[in-house]
Length: 328
Ligand SMILES: NC(=O)c1ccc[n+]([C@@H]2O[C@H](COP(=O)([O-])OP(=O)(O)OC[C@H]3O[C@@H](n4cnc5c(N)ncnc54)[C@H](O)[C@@H]3O)[C@@H](O)[C@H]2O)c1
Image (cartoon, rainbow, N blue to C red; front, side, top):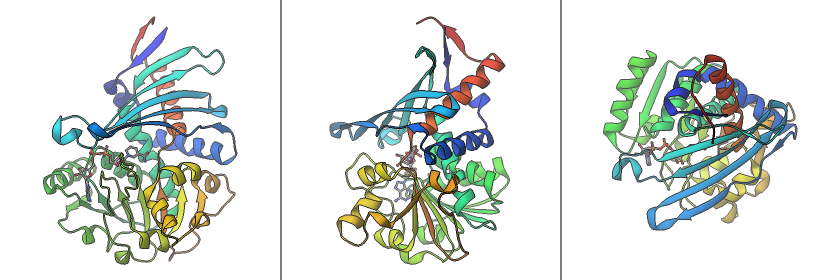
């Protein structure tokens, strides 16, 4: 029998603290060389400004074997009232290959992407970080904020979006839900200058702030992934000033304009990437080393994050009797 789990089912059973725990373990397994993680296969649908990725992975020590099919259509929210990112996950039993579950991957993507940023902040942001700046008031911004609040005592949030009403709505919703002061700002500089942690979670194809605005000691996480070649959220100065950590060096060099453009310009080379997050968690490299360094986590989004979160959801759903079992 195959367990079908809907977006609503997953919202009932997944908590950010649990997702952070399994995502951290998955990155550690990656740092220790215990995962199989091929680069995602991508189809570009330029006629629709669309992108589809197929993301298989196996995390041996965590029993997680899964494939996510994910689409990225940045015009969806405005043109079709659909999310930018939509996904479905198939979870297999590593012992037999049998399909255990087919589940919504849209909520899991938001949770595991937030969780990765939470893990990065745990190792890279200053312990006394209190002020968070967020770029982009979309779906991911919400789980980004949830995750950062799990690992640091955030007291104030600045939110900036090119669509001001979205930032205003986000500020109102989050202030109520989390009891944190959230200010919607009209100028991107305001979401950078006094912040200890900055998250960029936008669909922008050009840099969203200027590296010259950054204060010493800031931690930045950039999660933007684009349908367009050589798009980026961060300018060259931000990359140059930062100790750069990625989730996967291979994926970053292949997929990420933020890193590829400064390399192509000859401003940095591949060695400017200090580490993969998993190497830091596994203790092979140090995280933040002093109060002044500017740290940057560039997230491409890895299939292992989906696989371990899907397995966690499956186990929790089974024990809570949630979902529908069907024979395919
Ligand atoms: N790294 C990962 O694992 C991962 C996972 C999921 C999504 N993503 C990426 O995260 C980004 C956000 O996804 P989402 O689902 O929240 O999309 P969304 O469409 O819900 O939200 C994106 C928001 O960014 C805003 N925006 C665009 N340009 C901006 C700018 N210059 N400054 C400030 N705001 C700007 C848009 O107005 C929109 O509100 C996308 O690039 C997506 O591909 C990455």
